Amino acid sequence: DIQMTQSPSSLSASVGDRVTITCRASQKISGYLNWYQQKVGRAPKLLIYAASSLQSGVPSRFSGSGSGTDFTLTISSLQPEDVATYHCQQTYSSPPTFGQGTKVEIK
Amino acid sequence: QVQLVQSGAEVKKPGASVKVSCKTSGYIFTGYAMHWVRQAPGQRLEWMGWIIPDSGNTKYSQRFQGRVTITRDTSANTAYMELGSLRSEDTAVYFCARSYLGGFDFWGQGTLVTVSS
Image (cartoon, rainbow over all chains, first blue to last red; front, side, top):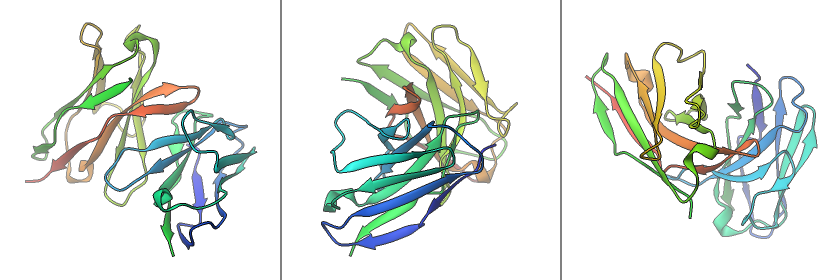
C-alpha cells in the first residue's frame, strides 16, 4: 500500500495568515491526490481533487499543488471557519490511502 | 440535492456482525461507485471497499477481506456494508462516500459502531 505522510500534524495560526500543509507519498502517484476538510463530529468534505482542482462551492482561498510524491494544500488567508483537520488521500492505486491528518487551530 | 443518509449507531458484542445502510437521493444511484471508509478513535481514515451499483461488482481492502461484504439495492437506492467477526478494534465511525473525479465528493453523516462485551 502507498503510505501518505502529512506535516505538520498540527498547527496554530492567526486569522488572515497563509497556511501550508504538506503531504508526501511513499511512491509516485502522478496527480492522483485529494484533500479533505473534516470538522469535529462531521464527515470529511472534498476540497481539492486531482492535486489542484477546486471542488465546486469551496472558497478560492483554498488551493492545491504538486505532482509525483510531494503535494501542498494552501489556505491563503485563514478564517475562523477553517478550524478543522485536513486529510490528504491518494487514489493512484488501490487501496486508496489517507494521511494521518493535520489539525488547524486559530492562535 | 445529493444526500447520503446512514443508519443509526450500533452497539455489538465481540464476534457479532453489523450491517450499516446508506440511503441515497438526489442523483442517479447506479451512475457512481460507492465507497466505505472508517475512522477509529484517533486513527486516520481507512478505506474498506467499494461497490459499483450498476453491476454489483465489489472490491475490498485486503485488511478486511473475508470479513466485509458490500451490497446494494438499486430499487431502494441504498448501499450496505456488513462487517463480521467484530472485535474491539472495529469500534469506529463508518462512512459511505460517493466516488467522483477521483475523489469522494459526497459523504454520509457517519455511523458509530461500538464493539464491547
